[in-house]
Image 1 (spheres, one colour):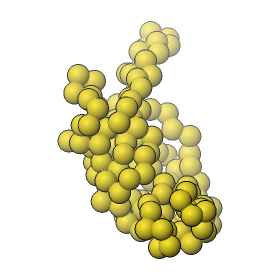
Image 2 (tube, one colour; image 1 turned 60 degrees about the vertical axis):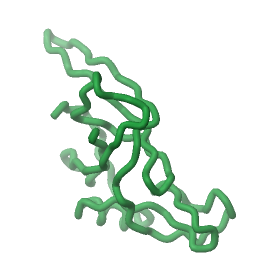
Image 3 (cartoon, one colour; image 1 turned 90 degrees about the vertical axis):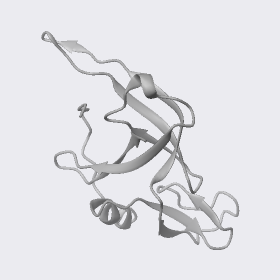
Image 4 (spheres, helix red, strand yellow; image 1 turned 30 degrees about the vertical axis):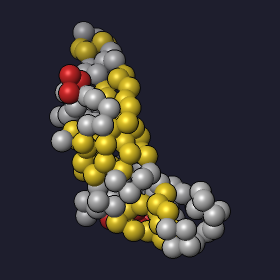
Length: 134
């Protein structure tokens, strides 16, 4: 797996349900019962109705690649770090997330490629979602 330095992420009261589920390998999104719309995990209000009735609900953890960027590796003290791929993923439920694709073969990157979400836990951090092609 390509490594990438990730700053530790620490939960707060709002994010605790998300990180508890992430530690179990489950991706949670925000759901509005009043509109029937899904939102990204950080949402505090429904983007359709502006209602604050959002609940945590499980995502399928599947989606498609919409776009991506490649952060070139750097050479320092004669050691070159690998390129890092960050993708924009449209989840099956609708929200878009920017996720690291740690094992992405750059030759297989394509708009519409199927992705699945899994989790990594950087040292001193909560579990964080990443995406894998296929």
